[in-house]
Image: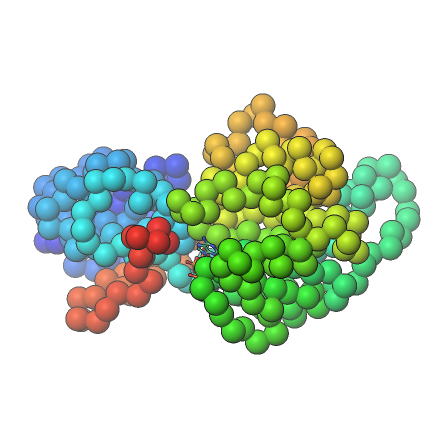
Length: 314
Ligand code: NDP
Ligand code: OXD
């Protein structure tokens, strides 16, 4: 019987195993490290798989990332030459748009100050700039960035997007490439980062970039929201920028080192919202169906969808 291998580290694998066993009719589902006969494995579904593992599977036909990002996968230099598919799914997209909208609103509605007021039993209505006066710039206008942009637009924010290639999206001002980056940053009061981590984007969220954000906005200074990857940000630069007022607030879902070390100054920083890389968690129930539907399509001779470009790294 052909087999499907789950190789998962950093997440609890049991729910994935249960869901795949329920969905993968007529196929044996194995969970690393119990891989059995490698020659029987046709598909691998992975999250941070051990380096070198996939190269030992001689009959592998495709690799599925169990998340939207694939940096965890591509960091293995021994990957076999088969298609790599990433997750694009309404469940994951909806989770991310919720995270982005929530965090944009937290900053626009001054929630840090209301939290303090609540602790101190202070009843005071602080002036909030209307959403229409706040400019949100989204770096990374792919599946997740475009969906978040639309929801923010509906909430009344002015929204612009930045991507590698140029785009036209109704109601969104679009910027692309290095030549347009300064113009994009210069009109962003809230910068939302939904970029993939690649050789080009690593360390992009640094002090020099924060200095180029809008300094004349109604929030009193720029805000950073990063739900892309921790490797995109230079954490010492975020602290420096928050301390000297180059940034006035941040929401960080991803970190250079995860889990975020207990000693990190981010935990109790008064200007930062910290979440544990769960802006858009991969839900086994929704995503197992997604992967099995792709395998069925593939076996009917149709092309796999959302195949990763290895050269671009996303
Ligand atoms: P997509 O591949 O659909 O979109 C990526 C976007 O980034 C594209 O618009 C792309 O431009 C742009 N981009 C890539 N490189 C550059 C660059 N050098 N300069 C400017 N723009 C660039 O990915 P998704 O939207 O599905 O996901 C984005 C990322 O979100 C994932 O890679 C992952 O890291 C992160 N993520 C985080 C989660 C969390 O819980 N925190 C959950 C899920 C994903 P172009 O359109 O021109 O190709
Ligand atoms: C993803 C993630 O890439 O969970 O999907 O970060």
